[in-house]
Image (cartoon, rainbow, N blue to C red; front, side, top):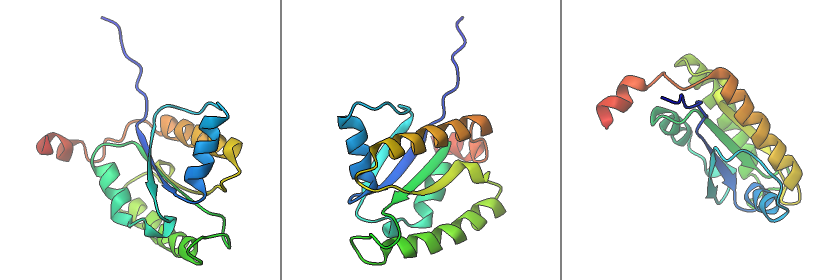
Length: 145
């Protein structure tokens, strides 16, 4: 029987105006980045509720990437500043409940930064791969299925 190699499953919550456009540019320029990421477009990184991150991990994903506009470039004026504050608190909460900090990352990527987006995803997936599968909520996932 052939042994299958584990690959991390990650989700990316990307700001519609900048990071999602950067990911789109990555695709249109045919730049490669890991296929392990599933992208969810959100209006603004400030819209990300910390529960989105916790639920993604609780449901068995191995990592969560949140990406928004660079500080000062938010289309909603201060959404990314709110996101940055929420993320700092969320990171402490996740560490408190035993989730490795490498499983969650926040980044700033502009619409014109396709190569940067590809690099952010590659580095994030590689970091999650080093940490290994998310086993923290393993029993809850079995009970919920």
